[in-house]
Length: 257
Ligand SMILES: NC(=O)c1ccc[n+]([C@@H]2O[C@H](COP(=O)([O-])OP(=O)(O)OC[C@H]3O[C@@H](n4cnc5c(N)ncnc54)[C@H](OP(=O)(O)O)[C@@H]3O)[C@@H](O)[C@H]2O)c1
Image (cartoon, rainbow, N blue to C red; front, side, top):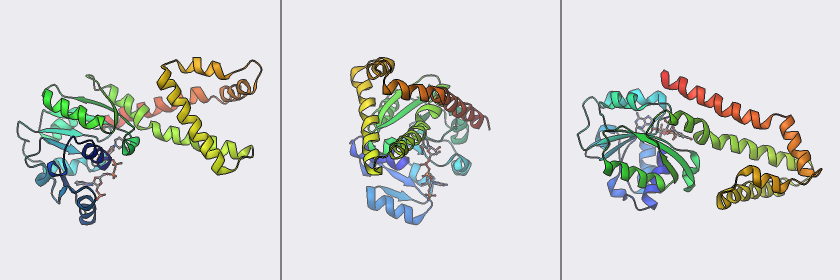
């Protein structure tokens, strides 16, 4: 995820490779990052953070304490910590990094191709220039939404960060359904992807309610009405609410541990 963000930031010209240093324990990964992105890489995170305006934390949640242990003393007053670690609250990062200037970011994997959806928040001590930089950096990987209230980050975790997995499951099922009724798999794949892409873009470009656009597809007593009825009978709309709510409750629980 950090690599996706970094590629966006470098390609978008928000920073240059010379502005970036990465702390990475594995030598082969350090070599890869320097070769691919031209950035400096070091073994110790403290060395990477030395003199940095923003110290970005992008380890797995279970490795966060290792990083916290490294940062024994406070960051300097002109430094802020930015975390993309799922479930790690502003307060956790503030305590762990011994720093009041904390930014919390929740991206998703389409960030890899510049079509991510990111929600972010920060502590009130983060100054305007760091907020502006964060907004510019995140806009290189897709859309970003800033929220004052951190409670929305658990909702973003459930909807936009987990969301690509729900969509991939839907895509897989729709392709399989095309094969089930007799289409060749490659044709079913092309038709599914273009249908989902085109429908999403239609909602975006027209700004109309999805229900309006749905009504335009449904003829009385027709094939689409039959298909929609089967989806309702199978509980698909309710299952989506269940899925997002389950992920939301899990995110809250993980944040309490
Ligand atoms: N993937 C998503 O959709 C998504 C969405 C939102 C938020 N996030 C959050 O993003 C964070 C990273 O997730 P990811 O999917 O990108 O996982 P990942 O690919 O495993 O990235 C974690 C990175 O941390 C490195 N690392 C491990 N221990 C370290 C240490 N002590 N010091 C410095 N670097 C260390 C790992 O290096 P090695 O490869 O050498 O082990 C690896 O490159 C997680 O906290 C996750 O919750 C992910």
